Length: 385
Image 1 (spheres, helix red, strand yellow):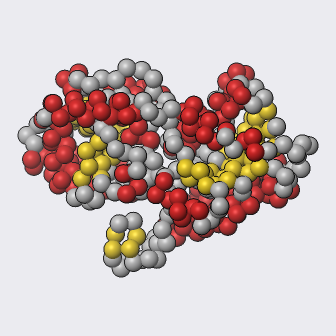
Image 2 (cartoon, rainbow, N blue to C red):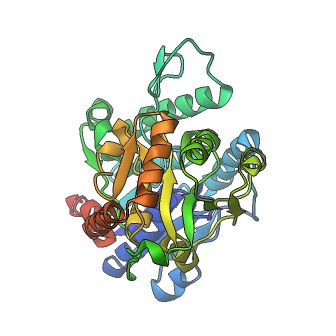
Image 3 (cartoon, rainbow, N blue to C red):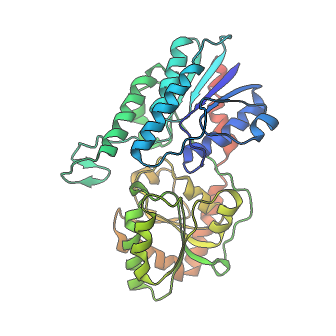
């Protein structure tokens, strides 16, 4: 049996939960299954071939740096056409095809593999939350007349293409249980992924041992709530006399410059640190008192798990897509009620007993998430061959 992992749309930065999932489960499968192929556009860890005997197959002739919607679209076309050379008939009936994203090149390549090898077992994975029709009156908790952007229309159309192509898949895996009923209308076999945490070190619960008041970790995009951050911190300044120290851990693109200019008048000690990974990321999180997470479109939101696993409570909005799993170690405000959000930050910064309670509850909850279970849950579908 060979497992063919289609990951040509991963950019290798591990910024997304989907990429983290892929980079964690594939080595775990390699320990149990002797034949693993990984089709990639961005180079995977070098130890994959050495330590895990994973066969990595580069479908590109060189690196490609995407930046902006049009360049991402160009990247997708380049990735797809360069990947056509890997489509072939398998030399064995026992094969599993796993497309690791809902991006159309990954899904189309997996679809063509399945078309050429109908006996193979295809697992179609989408880490994205179900994207609503942007032309609807109610869209992402917002009720108003609006003209959708081209990016919103494109994202919705890509999702529709994914749902059409995955009809040939033997299993559709999604990332949030609130989508299960919708997904069952697309495929009769649906699995909801339970993600896992990678941090195994000691947590820090004592607020006095933390250097930074606030940490933002993620990407500077609208769905991640970056446009809400200035209003939240402005409200905090009005109700809290403390001079706040804040760090922003994100790639310096999109709204980075805009956000920096918006926050300067506050007079806070603010540092933009760029993207951080591994131990360095967790060390910064552990040194932070609060993770602010004003995102409003998440399949899971792995940064929440990153934070509570080191003993750092999370402040976020009270919205359906987060309420399925973000249940401990978190304080919530009504959607876009940024004054209430600021009040929650003040409570965490000033009420040490409440802070300790939240931090410890969150850490204990984080221990129920295990990447071995994440990988094993999908392995249950492999023996069906």
